[in-house]
Length: 332
Image 1 (cartoon, rainbow, N blue to C red):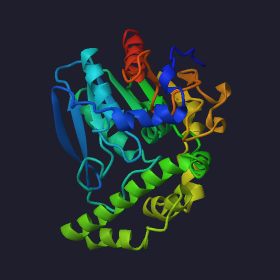
Image 2 (cartoon, one colour):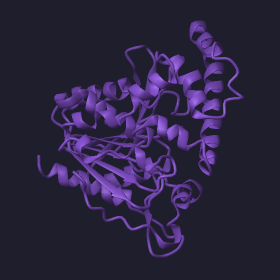
Image 3 (cartoon, rainbow, N blue to C red):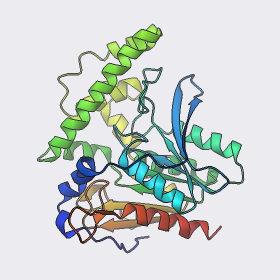
Image 4 (spheres, rainbow, N blue to C red):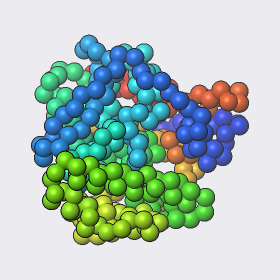
């Protein structure tokens, strides 16, 4: 179903690029209170780091960051602080290699990688079988969340889910980033990904698993890559068992999974998101009755900044997401 939105973009930040860029330049969210990190050993003998906010037996929300982000991203830390005030604990997953230390395998993370979120879910559910669990994902993390929800169908014990600014069709989004001002986002993201791979190679060489380091070396020189089509074909597809970039985009795009979701889910998308086009947005007959599609005309990519006074932003997502979660928890 489609949900009417309450979002009104700040008049001084109506442009989609300003909505997207402003938080990156000017927001510096402090670490939330009652904060601790746990390292979990994965089934393939690698690790993921999880940053928790809050203790006790309150409902627990898993948070999933976007591409080149981490638990230290301002939208994650800001939401953790707000959720704590609203009576929710949170567990922010760092994708492999995103917590400040490279992971110990050549594999990393990508838009369709759902093994680690499922491992974290199973770990938390085993520890706290009665605790209400929810999940929130942003951008790439939102794609992972929606794909995971669709894959699992009615097998998950979750009371709610939220996905924000999701690249629902990866091929269209990759092409959009090859055009106009969006190439600036593409350039910055690819630069960070190349550094990520370089640091990972040095790490693997230092700790000794030569077979894993060799997988990175076999990718060749990445410096000339200047599009996601190239990066995802050369790096993501080869490291994660896809035939090529087309196979990766086809299998990992989350729009095809929306019909199979059985968890109450809020999907927030801005029509003016500079990372995608209107083509990625699903028709209502493509989503299950559990999915609430909330479209805003403005908001950019993980922006959604409101507020009447210039340079005094209000981060609407930190109102809307807890509101949706509270509405679902009272129905339990």
